[in-house]
Structures are given as C-alpha cells and as structure tokens.
Image 1 (tube, helix red, strand yellow):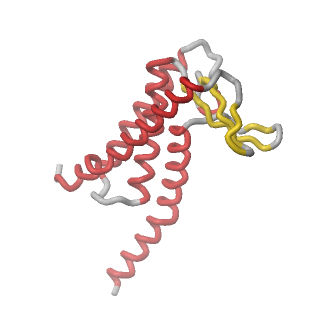
Image 2 (cartoon, rainbow, N blue to C red; image 1 turned 120 degrees about the vertical axis):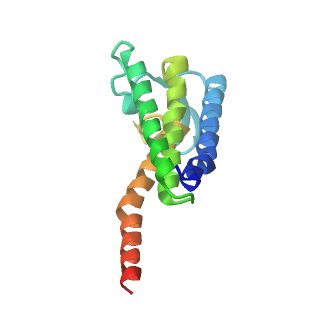
Image 3 (cartoon, rainbow, N blue to C red; image 1 turned 180 degrees about the vertical axis):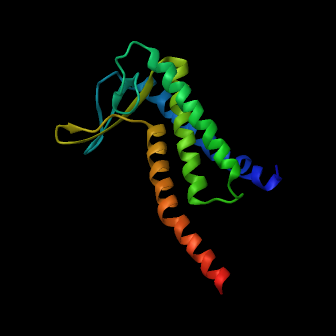
Length: 172
C-alpha cells in the first residue's frame, strides 16, 4: 500500500484518541462528583445529571437482560474497523470527511470502553426546556452526532461540489 494512503490514519487518529481521552475523563469526573439521578444546574436549560445507559441511543434495548452489552460493543468495534479502513483510503489531508470519521470513531470507541469495562455507558449532560428533557448524553455521543452531520454534509454538499469543479477543470 502506498505510504501516502496510510498517512491519513496515522496523521489523524491522534484527534480521535484525544477525544476518547476527553470523553473518558469527563465520564470519570461525572462518576466522581455527581450523585446518580440528582441534577446539578449549570445554566438555564442545562443540568449535569449522572445516568447510566445499558442500551443504545435513547436507552434502546436497555432492559433486555445484558446480551445487548456485548452486541453493541461488537457492533461499535466492527463500525470502528470499517471507519479506520475508510480513513486509510482517503488522501493524507484534513477534510470534512476525515474530520467526521474521526469524530464518529472517537465516540464509538469512547462508549465501547464503558460497555466493555462497566456494562453500561455513563451519561451526564442533561439538556431541557421546561419539564421536557432530551435524552441524557456524553462527550462521545456529541462526537458521534457531530461526525454524522458533518459526514452527511461532506457526502451531499462538499464532494458533489468538488466533483463538479474537477469536471469543469478537465473540460477547460
């Protein structure tokens, strides 16, 4: 494999690792300083509330007896492998696509660490309006969500524009 293709993974995975460390550090702090299910007001519309999630997003399959722990861990590890493979195929430069893949990868691995070590994911960011509370989430969830939005943006807006520009340049 040409070294320029491998450089992307080597060059950008430090960013995913940094986000994994940030995710694990914030989860450690949440477990150390928050009391389970007792909100701590940070600012209007935002509490820190320690919650554990044994399922997937929005506690999907949380009450299924434990098999979901290993299923979601295996799924996240499989997706991570695909993302690393994808990352290795991209040019050795920071693009929206490379940034998005690193965000998703870091979030997937951040949450899989919790699943494997503790059997549940630590969530603590509680956004609310009035009495309505969004699902409690964590730094890994933010990374996955931002990465997914950025990847969609890249695939539907950035890449088509680049393809159109390349076609115009080749016709000129």
